[in-house]
Picture (cartoon, rainbow, N blue to C red):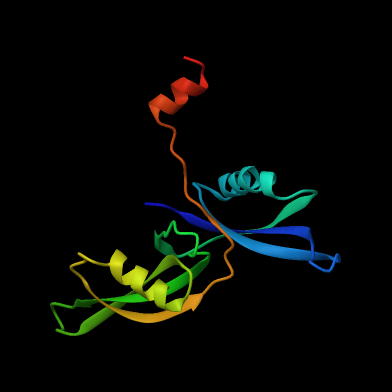
Length: 156
């Protein structure tokens, strides 16, 4: 299971009018530790930012799953809070447990549709508690080294 960290990158961005503005942008990184998350975001973001930047924050998230959409239109990330409904056998009462799922989509309607597609085949009963647009700029899943990849990098 992935462990997602929200990292914030602080840097000077050139505005369209030529002014320079300090920005603090959030990115999501799949990592093992806080240190690993910081190292991975620095590695991923360096080619895209000219000049100096710093990692201003690293924090764990409660995201349990991410539904990606590779289309060019899907440029936003939406947080879906889902309540999974179970029945307590002793008391007979319904119990709700919240989960957070990040959905990549172009707009709210597509986020809802993408979420429903991702939940197809789920046997558990659930209710959507909320869907909100997030400020997350990009998501970097963990890239596992395969034996083929390692051999080609070693020049074998």
